[in-house]
Amino acid sequence: MNEPLISIIIPIYNGEKYIDKCLSNVVAQTYKNLEILCVINGTTDSSEEKVREWMQKDERIRILVTDVADLGHASNLGIENTTGPYLSFVDVDDWVEPEYIEKLYGGIKKGYKICKGNCTMYDGVKNLPAYQGRSSGEISIRGASFLLPCRTISVYDRSLFEKLRYLEFSYYEDLSLWPILIATAGCVYYINDIIYNYNQTNETSIMTVRNEKHLVLDKVFAHIFSNLTPDLDREVNLLISALFIQSFWTSNYQYVPKDEVGQAYLRRVKQVVDNRLVGYYYIVENLPVPKEMKERMIRFYRN
Image (tube, rainbow, N blue to C red; front, side):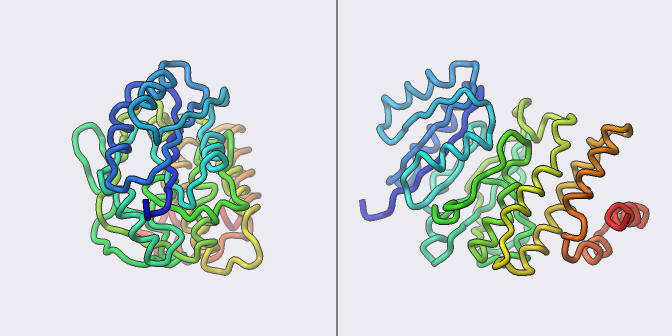
């Protein structure tokens, strides 16, 4: 094959009811030179058996089994145990369109190290596009704040992961590396075609489960800042600020209990981001939210 090998990493935790749909779409890709690694991470159902059945059907499928039930760990194992010069991630409960890899690699061939596409958000009834009113093209570091900070719906140049790994044993592992990957790449090429389907009906997904396990943004942003090197410019700091405001104030804040546990969490978050969020006040002032909310956001960062 003339085209380079692209490694698709599929972390699988108790995904037996999704595997057939996921893998049938992955193996049917129009881009054929694929390495498909299924990382079975701590599963207690028949996921491993189902993947091994698929291995008999398609020699491109490989399996790696670990007792560690953690998505960040599974993603890192996938990076370390694949060989393609380019990487992509697919979550087992989602499904991809036939030209998922072909279109994303088309962006890579234009000279970019990350290519990201549009997707649908499937809620069991409707497939709504994640991004509307956008056009395909280069997205700057600062401009990438509109993109979902997730591993999936992308193809990456493997060189980006030479010294970078996802945060392990924590929710929001995708977010923990996303701004640093963009900063290292310098920009993102965005394709406005819908090539991925994000399944929001999985009852065990982080996006469905609503509890105090979400109180980890202190660890997530500490991981981001630990990978922020002096050669990465002001643009990535602005992106990190925007991502913090989106992740903390739009969703995470609602999980914070009104007790000492919650107060301790808020103190940890404040300690991690203190004086590190470039443009925080400017971004807040320009948000389309009530004045009372803006005052709360400013008070949190200022105190």
